[in-house]
Image (cartoon, rainbow, N blue to C red):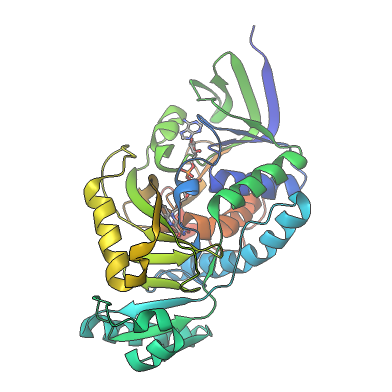
Length: 378
Ligand SMILES: Cc1cc2nc3c(=O)[nH]c(=O)nc-3n(C[C@H](O)[C@H](O)[C@H](O)COP(=O)(O)OP(=O)(O)OC[C@H]3O[C@@H](n4cnc5c(N)ncnc54)[C@H](O)[C@@H]3O)c2cc1C
């Protein structure tokens, strides 16, 4: 006879999405159990760069934009709350970011983006290369090989240090009574009358009022066990960590999909690749080499930096680029929150709040219809 553990909500996957949801539900008074097949908070959420833009990517559908704005606001609040509750400073900083255009086409695009950001009341300043050199001296370096045609400063871009944020979330969850079980893969699922009755993990039977899948890039396999099928792919991202003695710059430098993120202690993250490599988390000579070339072409002074570490993580990607947030079809007590691709850290707070509302039977403050798991079929 196996033990049965019971809670109001079982969360399958303890990355930033699962832990944020657990924290939100525990704050609302629910009993919560998080299971992770490995160590919680060690996959994509640990690997990410921690950039928190003030809203979602340009051209994002209205609902995603709304989720992005909500998430950005909540990060400022949660960072204070988490530090009060746990004593862990997650490194949240409103550092600002330069968005850099390296050719005429990108410069025209940046101008359109700046106009759209202004329409959304964001603090944005569009400057030419001469002004940029005055405002960001590290980019005035004559040895710089990456041309810069135009630059836009987004004052409200922020950053968080992922490992610290995850440590704060884990600790806050534990203080609020969340049960967290590591190294616990789901091996079986019991169904009864259109509901999930329990899941089995090793010799332990785990039952809950509600089940939410937050297993990131691995969500497809977990959903299959529940009887649902959603296309979620792993998309590898490699990162290089450099370390400098003096702080060379304090704002994030964005050039298309690549970036340099300066930490307050002189470290600089160089990211990131986007590769379809299956579930392979290796770093490669080509990936790391390309990131280092990019870093040195933009900030030649980094040539003397110490190469501290490289790593890779697997982002969960969906076919249309939108996350799946909502109830699973044909199961009255199961939902999914995954597929945040390049924005999971950023969207984690808003996701936790709206999924928390959904699970508690309230109306989510952001319309979740565009994120519905059934949207493929429609
Ligand atoms: C290089 C890189 C840079 C990034 N930079 C940023 C950034 O700057 N800003 C940003 O917002 N986002 C960024 N991202 C994206 C972000 O990291 C992801 O979108 C986010 O971490 C996804 O969180 P998650 O909780 O869904 O997944 P994960 O963190 O991968 O967590 C999933 C968890 O589920 C567990 N799991 C898997 N299968 C099972 C199972 N069968 N049973 C139980 N548990 C299971 C795993 O062990 C894991 O702990 C970046 C990602 C990468 C790789």
